[in-house]
Image (cartoon, rainbow over all chains, first blue to last red; front, side, top):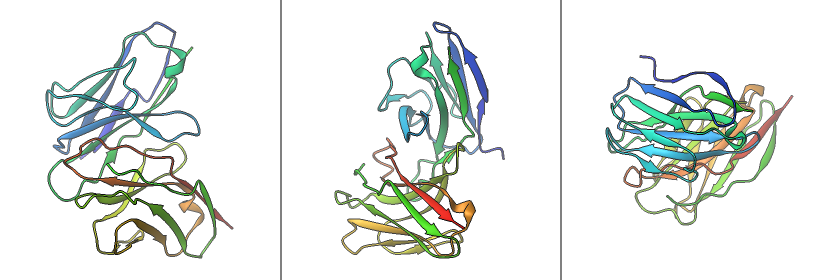
Length: 114
Length: 110
């Protein structure tokens, strides 16, 4: 049981390049989330999904797209990277049933856009 | 989800109890109070959660006031490894969107 994994762990992009961050969970969780965390700041929600085939916008969705084609995977895409998107990106998942809604986090992806 | 308010920072002496307050005056009846912490640049780590009753686990205790408008996370014997940012969140599964506030930077002093 690997929990929540993120690929890649580090990446450097040039302005205008595109990339996709992959989040995978093996806990059969329904809900998945993408956050960004800038230096010295708290986590801000980018997009989230409450089930396979569904996505929704969070607090800071501009410049990002997401897809949840399979229940275990949640992809975050940057179509045209900008220096303002330099950040650490965390993925998380929640079971989604009644009762305990403990959120499990991945180790993060550190992205630098030059 | 209800908005939560926490102090920006707190200090605690090693070996003493750390009491971290959280205000959630607009919490609704079906929202749980969750606590997480983030050590340095790692992913946040779940600590404890509760609805009405006080809760205790191997990491901490959670005290929720009777009116549920505030809560306190207690680390009974703080160690240097407990230095982290602690987040208090009010969340119900039906709301689905889970957002973090600014949290409290706890520094445990030797």
